Structures are given as structure tokens and as C-alpha cells.
Image (cartoon, rainbow, N blue to C red; front, side):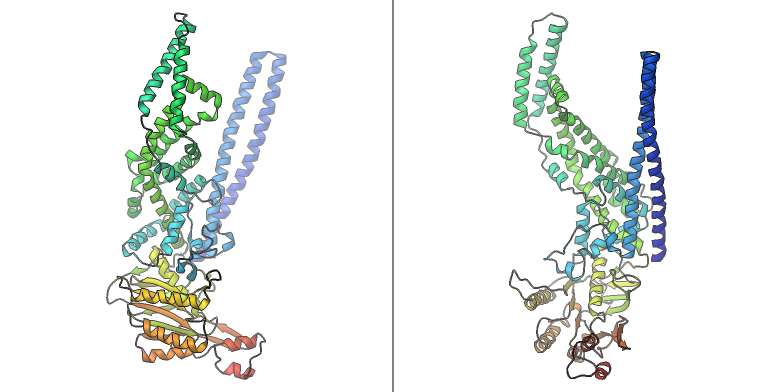
Length: 624
């Protein structure tokens, strides 16, 4: 299925959900009105019967009215719950539609607002940020799942085994949209908000702090025996009158020992109370993973194995611990709490039960959450594959006869389909350097990023924007968007030099994987003469080494290096000027660029260009 039909299918789903929401809203209004009518009518009829017929008939009428009111309230609650679920389900479908259309304004807000300063790939290849690859792909609800996806995209160094495992899982998940969307629905319900993030750090911190309450059992049994003795003495005194009020003394001893022990034990419940809702809501996510049959998804079933262990069902463990926390919630009612602890050492019993449940969950929860986070990151890649069925899964190979990198019809995922131009490209052997020249705005920088971002998608385990894509395991290094630093006193040129030195050191490093380097407009921060000298020396230093690279430049003098160095090959992008307008086809061609267009652009925009008339600008190459 091509992309437009996929978008049409999503549009129809959103339309159906809007229709259902309208019907639910109408039903909700009607039931709310019916509740009001039943309440008022029941009250009026009950009062009238009380005045005219007596108490018993009035009581029966009031009870009938109450039953009717509660029944309607039950159905109203179900409609509200269904409305919330349908709203979230529609949000999920609308977000998918926005991803398919690159509608950034309709996408959920990004978790990561800015690229990390110590990860150049994120900035250079638009991996993160408000309009980055991560935001386009990210369907995660958990913060940890989103960060895991970010780390996969920005890894830079491939792990062939991990890539193969992720690809298998992404392929299976891509074909099971309902499984993915229901998992996201459950997670959003757990997060209690429209595309809010679920953060498991507090839960894991609480579980990691687990330390059984030392010496609690002897106190439990002693205080329980003392409380039972007090109750027995109270019954014998007040009920039967057989004994004097000895219960006063045992109660005093019980209260003193209980207060002393609780002070030494400390507050066991404060953080547990805060986690009651997250634990309860997380149960729905885990139940979804427990219920699926995983019939035709062996890789997915293997990943979700911790949720399929009948002896350690996550939902069962969470149900037990939330019951204990419900028992601890007695503290919210001071009167009930006082009576419960007067009769028995209630808080100590709850602490003991909490210790038992917490011990089991603390041992298993990290694995459960890790699987969920993994599924969220994989689900984001799978949704990308599902929304773009014409994208190819890459082949990562280490065969000596295979090209270092070969792509057919490769394009940039952040460019809309209607404007995207795809190209064929290959680096046949290690040591090869592709030198790309061309005019301003012709597509050099975009193509450099296209190669890098697709390689990052490949290493993450997802599909790439290409018909075919084969690559050896290559480390990725870039020098594209270099920035200066006013606070550190670093100029643009010096920052670029430092980045290029890091890249050169990585190329010369003894590593199992060759380097794939991408450089856009080398040494743009200095004058023409020094840029040319430095660029020539740098290209000679990187050509023929343990790596491959793509380097774009305006310096047409550099194309002569292809005749001097066998590993250097020229490519270019071209433009057409006709009728005072400049157009680009963004098609990569072999060989050096025959023209550049800087002076043409200046003249077309009305800036003065000394020494050349308009005819010369249209007929002659201009210095770029």
C-alpha cells in the first residue's frame, strides 16, 4: 500500500471516531438529564408519599428512586470512561496522520527540545529537536522508551546483532498496528493525560530502596497478642463484669510500645501512597502484554516472555501490592485509622505486607519495565515502517566483496514526498571519498544529511527512505553544523578545526568498523586561499584510509584531486537559469560541477556585482 492510501485509511478512522464521540456525547447528556429527572422525581414522590401514606411506602419509593439513580450513574460512568478512551484513540490516529504528512504542528510535543551538545550527530543530522527524526518517529509514552529510541538513533556505532534483532521485531510489530496502538492507549491512560510522559524513575527508586523492616515479626505477634488480650479483658469487664478494668493497663502498655516501635520504624507509607496510582495504572499496560497470543510473532513473543510466566504475572503482583496500599490508605481517615490501630497494630501489619509484596516486585519490575521500554522504542520504528510501506529495511553486511555503502532511490525522511527527490549512490570500496560540488541551494548539504540520517535509521533497526540499501558496519562521524561558542571564546573556524581533528583521529583509530564521515562545506570559516590549501591536505589525509566519506564543497579547484588520488570521485548537483529564474532538479550526477551561482543569486536579488554585466552572469560560471 502506498502512502496516500495509508493516509486515507487514517482519515476514515478519525472520521469514524469523531462520529462515535458525537454519539457518546449525546448519550452522556441524555443520561445526565435522566439522572437529574430520576433524582428530583424520586425526592418529590417520596416526600408526597410520606405525607399521604406513611413512612414505609415512602421509604420503598425512595429506595426505588435511589436504585434507578445509581443504575443511571453506573451507565453514565461507563460512557465517560468510553469517551476518554475514544478521545485518546482518536489522538493516536491523528498523530499517525500528522507523521505521515509531516504536519509538525499536529504532532505531540517533543520530549527532547534541543540536541545534546556532546552528540554532534543529533544536531548535524536533525535527529532530535522540534523538527527532528526523533520527534517524527516517537510514539513512546514512557520517558525511558523515548530516550531509548533517541539513543538508538544517535548511537553512531553499529551493533549488527542488535540491528538484526530489532529489524525482526520491527517487521513483526509493523504488521500489528492494533497491538501497538492498544499498548499506547493503555500507556496514555496510565499517564493520565494527552501525550503526557510516564516516568518510571520514582517507582524504580522506591523499589531499589527496599530494605525489609528488621525485627518486625516478633513485634507484630507480641503487639497483636497484647491487643487481643486487651479486647478480652475489656469484654470480661464491661460485658460480663467478671474482672476489674485490667484492660486499661494492657491498653496503656500496648499503646506505649506501639508508638515507640512506629517512631523507630519511620514513615513507611508516604512515598508508597504517591505511587499507588502509577502502580494501578501500570497494571493495564502489563495486562495488555499478558493477554496477547503472539501467534505469528515469534520474536515478539520471545521479547515478552516475562509477561507470559504464569507463576509471575506482573498484573497479579501489582494487584497484590495495590491491595496493600489500599489497606494503608486507612490513614486518610483519622477516626478509622485510630480505631484500627487501637484494635490491632494495623500500620505494622500493613508495613509487613508491604515488605513482602515489595520484595517480589522489586526483583521483577526492572525486567518488566525494560521490556515495555524496548517495545515502545521498537513500536515507534514499526509505526514509521507501517506508515511508509515503500521504505526498505536495510541490509547490514560484512562480506568483503560487498560495497561499503550502496543505495537505490535514497531520499530524506524530513522532506515531504511531493518535494522529495531520490538518488542512487554507492561507495564501492574502503578508502573512497565522494567529493560533491554544486551551486548554492542545489542540494549538496541535504544529500550529505540524507546519507547520514538513513544510516542512523538503519542502525536503530528501522526502515530507510530508499528502494534498496546495503551497508557494511560503519561508524558515523559528521562535521556539518559546527557552531562557535561566545562563552568559551571559540570561533567558528576553531570549532570546525577541532571537529575535523576528532574525525581524523577516529579515522586513524584501530577499530573493528571503518569510519563513514560526512563533511559539509569544509573549512568554510576561513579565506579562499587557506581554505583551498587546508582542504586539499585534509582530503589527501582521509582518502585511502580505513573508512569512506562524502565531502561537499564550493571550491571547484578541489575537483582536480580526482585526477591525482584514485580514491577520490567527483559528483555534482546542477541548476538551470531561464527567464531570470533559477531552478534545481536535486539530481546527483557524476563528475565535477560545471557552474556555481553565488553571483547569479546576488544579481537576481538586485545586489551590485562589479565587473560583470547581466549577459555575463547568465552565460558564464560565477565564483561560488
